[in-house]
Image (cartoon, rainbow, N blue to C red; front, top):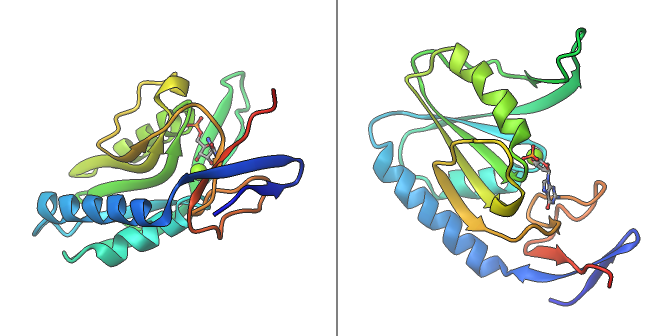
Length: 180
Ligand code: 5GP
Ligand code: MG
């Protein structure tokens, strides 16, 4: 692993592949325990979480379902600010144990606006599992039930996360080198 350059930015190795896999495996073990006999439904948020979701799902041994959604944000018709809706949520959430899979919580705004929509559909339970959390950046009070890594407030890429569309296929997580 060495420094990579994407567009006009440079990134250095931050979380190695083996450590990511170890943490994702640990999370799967925990979920195996917490959701044994509950037949949970995982709802993975595209694009960023696709790799995390795929690895986690492979490590799970309990009976579970997974579906994938995209969040679209647009301005409300009134001055209500940004409205976030789910595209592709065809699964029945009602009366299911639901676990949201998200790549990263930064400010928390996305989750803060999206979670009430799922709660409206009255799942039996609703938990949030994320790969990365930037506590210093988080402004909204979002419940985070499972988290693999707490990281500093610096831009990262790799393992599904992109910089302007690129870098998702990198197996490790890289951190931006801030210009001095
Ligand atoms: P939030 O609504 O919590 O501020 O932002 C969540 C979204 O912002 C994430 O799902 C992700 O798409 C994007 N994001 C936040 N921080 C980073 C980062 O460090 N790297 C990348 N690639 N995306 C990020
Ligand atoms: Mg995302």
